[in-house]
Image (cartoon, rainbow, N blue to C red; front, side, top):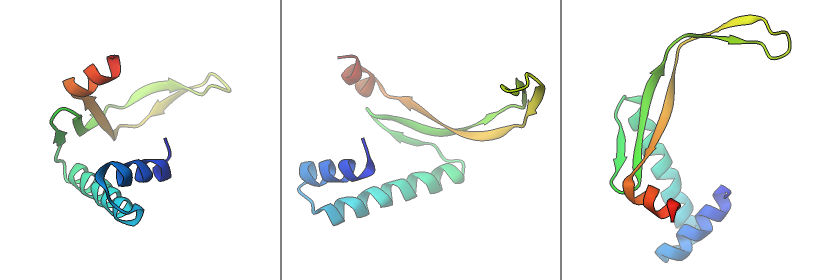
Length: 91
């Protein structure tokens, strides 16, 4: 689903204009991003939890040459779905 379609669906379900729905979505993304940057998890009960985890340095291979390369450590965003979301998706 594209952002445009998501905004349309939010506007429809929340009885908002598309402009207001777009503003709300941008605000949500901004708040989640800032929280994760500051090291704070974002937990939405029933939906899931966004968190930042440290991925350790590891060895990989260049797919073209097969040469062993070092992949440096970095922080990555992780999402763990909540039980309600899992149940909804599993059907």
